[in-house]
Amino acid sequence: MQFEFTQLEQFTKKVLTKIGCPETDAATAAKVLLAADLRGVDSHGVARLSGYVRLWEAGRINVKPKIRITHETPSTAVVDGDAGLGLVVAPFAMQVAIDKAKTAGTGWVSVKNSNHYGIAGIHAMEALKQDMVGISLTNASPLVSPTFSKERLLGTNPISVAIPAGKQPPFVLDMATTTAANGKLEILQRKQQEAPFGWIQDKDGKPSQSPFAVKEGGALLPLGGDREHGSHKGYGLGSVVDIFSAVLSGANYGPWVPPFVAFLEPHPHPVGEGLGHFFGAMRVDAFRPAEEFKDHMDNWIKRFREAEPVTGQEKVLIPGDPERELETERRQHGIPLLEPVVNDLKDLGERLGVDWVRK
Image (cartoon, rainbow, N blue to C red; front, side):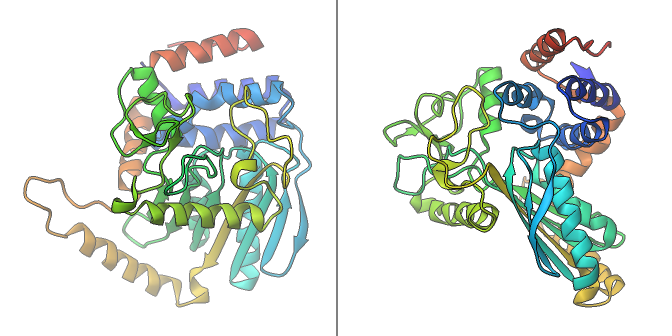
């Protein structure tokens, strides 16, 4: 089933205002959430709307937060999200990083007391509008086992870096530090399909293809899947994200990070406040003239696009290409939603008195 972006955006805004979000915050949150659907990251879009509502119902989200800077220098800041929607806290913090970069050349912001912030890439891309490099990181629910362990200590902990170009589209890396994000398992569950080996392990630490393995006590695996394929590198990357996002800001880290799902209680002995993010903005002209840099980025991108592909394989892509192409297509033809997602959103609308999208 296909739905227009504007229809889903309006439905999302109405749901968020129904639970008490101010109009401006609801609009910001809806824009960030729907960006995931537009860019093909279906696991992080409107499919998660009811999850945010359940967190609010559990008293774990403050819909009217007083987001503030608690510590800063000319180029750095710590932001307290006041338990607000990460979809609202993150844009605030990213703007602080951009504003600091305008005067200091670079801006770095670590965030505490927040919640799930959607896809990392949408926040990093804000810097592109100012000819800046954008960086966006966040820690997440502890569903990932370190290499050689069966204990869940890390989240999928994504990394996004957005780099401006000139005539070419920007370079936009947006990746989890696990072999697959938990949302991919949710999609497989809805489609009743198995997961590839290397994504997850069962509760005993053995490889599994069941998309329900994590719910049954298993864990996601770091990028690489196992030691022979470099899982220690994915483990290292996820750890850096956790430290920058939370140890630096005063948020919870490792196994103390509060889970996104409302039916799981936060850790009874937290080591910080809420969930953490980290943002960076770097003015290109703090390093070399912006136009000169973008000309060379165009050259870099063009040369990599021209890389000779392996026989029988597709052309070489640049990070951000698939998402950009999907966004163009989905703005024109609509956003596809699986039937279980549609039914979940209809139920949510009925519960809150918000009419579902009319086709």
